[in-house]
Structures are given as C-alpha cells and as structure tokens.
Image (cartoon, rainbow, N blue to C red):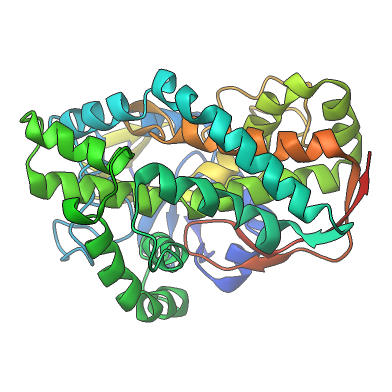
Length: 397
Ligand code: OVV
C-alpha cells in the first residue's frame, strides 16, 4: 500500500456553493475513490457508504478526542472546552455516555410523550388557522423550542440564544471561513448565556439537567463535568431537530405521493423520519483523526491525519441505495449513517425521532396535502444542511 496513488480532489467542501447544495458535488467525491485527498483543506476524505460506515465504527483508529472538526486538538487549542461525549474517546466517553444514556433511556422518554403530543396538536391547531405558513420559521423552529428547553429544565429568560449557540457550535467544526467567523461573532453573548444556563442553580427540578447533577451526587461524574454534559444537550439538541423536522416536511413537499401514503397508514411516520434523515442528512460531515497508520481500500492513511467523513454522501451512495435521490417509504432505510454509527451514534436520536413523529404526525392527521409555494431557502452552516424558509400551503381535511 502507498499513498502516492490517493486521488486528489479540488473541491472545497466548506465553500458556499457546496454548503448550499452538497448533493451536486457528492458524486464527484464518491467517484474519485474510496478515500481521497482534499487539496483545499489538506485532509483525507471518504464519501462512499462502506468506508464512511466502517470508519465511524472504528473508534480506536479513527479517534474523536482530537476533535471532530478540522482543528486537531493535539496541535490547536479548541474554541471551547471539548465535549465530554462527542470529543472524547473511551474510557472517558463510556463513562459520560453511560450517565447520559440512563437519563435519556427510551422508557423514561415515554413518560413525556403525552405532553409532547399535546404540544404538537396545539401548534398544528394554531398553524392551520390559516392555510399558508412557513414550515421552517413557523413550525420546525417552533416545535423543538416548545418542548426541549422545558424537558432540560432550562431557565425561561434568554432561550432565544439556543439557536444562535447551536449554529456557532456546528460552524466551528469547519475551517475558519467567513461562515465560521460570522457565527462566532454572534455567539459570544449566546455562549455566556449557555454557560449560565448549565449551572445547577439555574436548572429547574424535574428536568434532564438536574438528572445529570443527581449523577454527580452519586459520584458518577464531578459537578464540573455535569455542567459540561448539560452543555452537550444544549449544543446538539436544538438545531439538529429543527432541521430534521424541516427536511422531513421538505421531503413530503417534493414527494406528494408519500404524504398520501402516510395519511393512509399513519404508522409509516417512523420510517418517514428515518428515510428523511437518509434523504437529506442534517449533519452532513464529521471529522476523525487517525491514531495510527491505517489502510483504507489499499491506500495508506498515515497516523495523525484528519479525515473528513461525508455522512450525507454515504446516505445517497448508489452502491448502497437504489434510486438514492428518492424519498421512498417502501425502502429499508435502516443502516443509514445520518445519526452516525458505532459508539458515538447519536445519543439524542430517540428524542429527535419522537419530536419529528409527533409534530409531523399531528400535521398529517389534519392536512390532506402540503405543497410548497416558493423555493426553499437554505441557511449556510459548515456542518448542518439547514433551512431558513419553506413556505407551504396546506389543504385541511
Ligand atoms: C453531536 C454533537 C454536536 C455538537 C455538540 C455536541 C454533540 C456536544 O456534545 O457538545
């Protein structure tokens, strides 16, 4: 094996053009080879399903503790103290993950389901007072904000900082381009608010935040670690679900027949949520760092290399998926890497799935059809495929 033969690719995955429409570039990345060298960043990349999934699953070789953005924490100071979950390896990761998995266990989330369902119906009632609304600014950005901060037990004042903060967190995985810098400037105040919001004295009883501090009381982590674990909920729990719900609605507006199918069989909502994450993956990319020399499909990836994994491309790799560009409720969508794979696979996916099922399920009960009335507008982010606006018109049942 040698790396002189690793194909070189001259695409900047963090340019405005790629972030606007990543799917227009993925084929070129996948066709370049199973692993390639990205000239613009000086990092390796993988964009085919098999290699992306295998790398995510190989956490000993492709480590997270050196950062899952382009910055190598072994060489550069992180912009904020590293996440104890996302930016950690075992054994630390397994301890913190264990604490959070117990708090977010599916059986415990089910207790919140009736309240969330009620909130979903309330919002759908409000929206369907009129037959037109914006599926992003009136729905996808609103629903998670009505249930998630309360579930954590966050203080009431200042919650609007959550979306600004999350956008900055996901921008910061990319290079210091104009998007990173703009996000960072806007997030100074938001970061200060988040730091306050994560403190024990500012968390209301009965929420996940206090549950984390209860784990600290049992000696499972320190109080400082507890604050930073709460910070993970705030970092990863809002912008992701906002755009996941946005993409789910976008998928139905682009594939109206699937809305009819969902209305005919409401149990399809579970599959619809997964399939929409495959079809338009909110988290498009994450990096890993090679902890040792390793071979990928006959090519050497040297120790200390940063590797960019294109989750959104893997989820549309025709080597894996039949007609990948179609949102198709008859396909077996499981196995997609939209929530990652391996030990870091999305901790919050049960929450994300429930939120999306509740709000879009409630909308489908009420509306015979949903059509878009204008071209969707994207909001550029270095990691998230994100929507700014999706104006729709619904026909009530
Ligand atoms: C998955 C994710 C994204 C962003 C931040 C974090 C996790 C965190 O743990 O802070």
